[in-house]
Length: 252
Image (cartoon, rainbow, N blue to C red):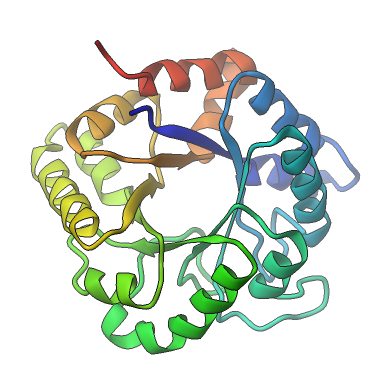
């Protein structure tokens, strides 16, 4: 089994928004990633429009549909709509992405840094998961390693979980990733036992990705943005995406 690579293009939009105008072009960057072999594109539109905006979501939806590849929209389904941001469920309803990844991040967070608490959140998530399934989205829920209540995630209809890999990246950088890897592997197996597929993302890079997919069983997809775009500044998008695909390629 080959783990799929979905490239998160949020950082392209950050650079564009810092100057205004249309450059660098988010769609052109996504095309470059797909031309290099990426399996899909991920975006995480936020209510404050700090990077990806609604118009980007519509444009990338059209691109991925035309290319026949996965479009993955991440976001907080509980964040209310506001000017320029119609809301997560509304964006999914209008663009019908292949995958909707629900993430419990607040407006003030710099980046996503924790998963759902299913004891607290399952009842609120259930009708939203049902609505997303009804419009044809595969539904993935962002979770912490060691997360309890994965049975609840399956019960309310999620198809997958996405493991928040920030703690693994920190452990890898410290030189002692073994305990973190063991916890992630255990969480993946628990999810798979109850019928959930496993995705992963956050702070994965060329340096730490190989050890992660070797140590965690049957990861279906990784979503990588920050490190990949940063590395591409030195080596180019095409070369960088191909490096990631080589890391993810099954070994004999």
